[in-house]
Length: 460
Image 1 (cartoon, rainbow, N blue to C red):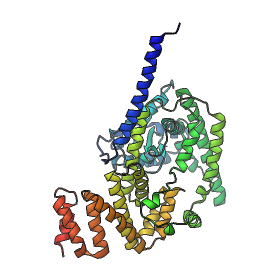
Image 2 (tube, rainbow, N blue to C red; image 1 turned 60 degrees about the vertical axis):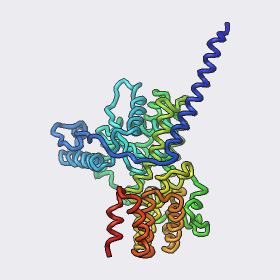
Image 3 (spheres, rainbow, N blue to C red; image 1 turned 45 degrees about the horizontal axis):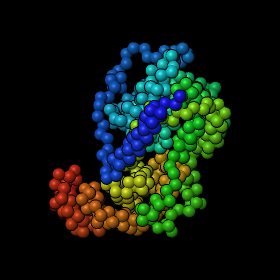
Image 4 (cartoon, rainbow, N blue to C red; image 1 turned 90 degrees about the vertical axis):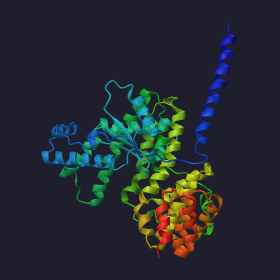
């Protein structure tokens, strides 16, 4: 007999759950409508990164078993320890933040079906490249740039599982051991590159196979693995209004041939083979993956929240890493979603000013070259190409137009006001800029640029 009472209860329960999801998603989206406050570094650095290890480590034991000489063992340990120590003590790692907590929950969910669980320590870094990496001691670092680009939890689970696969198969160690073997060095440089690429591809496919099995055990949909690979290599989407929102004339944009020429400048031979290697990995994944419905096994709301945080943190970290092209691009794209967000307006203004400053000082070519690796084959490359080819007058007009519209619209934004003052000084001289520095001094007596503004007004 049909239980009508139960049916009605279930109906209202499903409606309530749907409403709760819509409300939660709206709340997550709404929290960044007006502003964003970057995450401050807080928490203790793990002691193992600043204390000298006296005992025989698992890495050293494994190297002994592989018959690597003591000198080489010490060299590998020293390099690994130094690199990790530098990352953790330099302020590049987040502590006690929601992104790290969530990623650790996903990693724990992945490892839960395993009887013998590897000792993996997960952290989130401020690095903006969409990547993750694991060390032989089990330290797994996920870049904020990756969290900003992934589309769902299952894709994150694949990336984590892939890195855990590298750890399980001791790939970092084996790579080092291979470099110590003279017989691996070929007579011709091209042969050596081919051998290195083949070796790398084998290790990647081995880690992929491990990841698919781990996803299957945990209940994640492995079809998302192929999409995750695409996100990792071509992680930004075309934004039709990007140049228009930055007041860039269509006539000044780089054409397709210009972008291709710019992309290929000093492009490494290894990157030339990358698309083919990626396609091979995708094909293998499509043949061996198992189908599940698991897209979100920890929390969809938490994923949406940390992705939102990561998108803003990507901009903040790109700016502080002096990659103003990436900061400008991602801020302009995100502004389409949050057009009233004061943080985004300020970051666009700051990035435009610095790029104009570099152009005026004859430094922009070096700056763009320095950050070329962060610019994938998408719209961000078009923006970088435009900045490379634009003359000083074009960047002056571009920066001035945006700053003027922003200054009139949000004169209560501290960053916009001080950036406008600096722009006026750079373009027209100290006297023309004093009005803006004085405006800053009057309206932001507690501002972080107060002493700087005061010095610009009082100095001759």
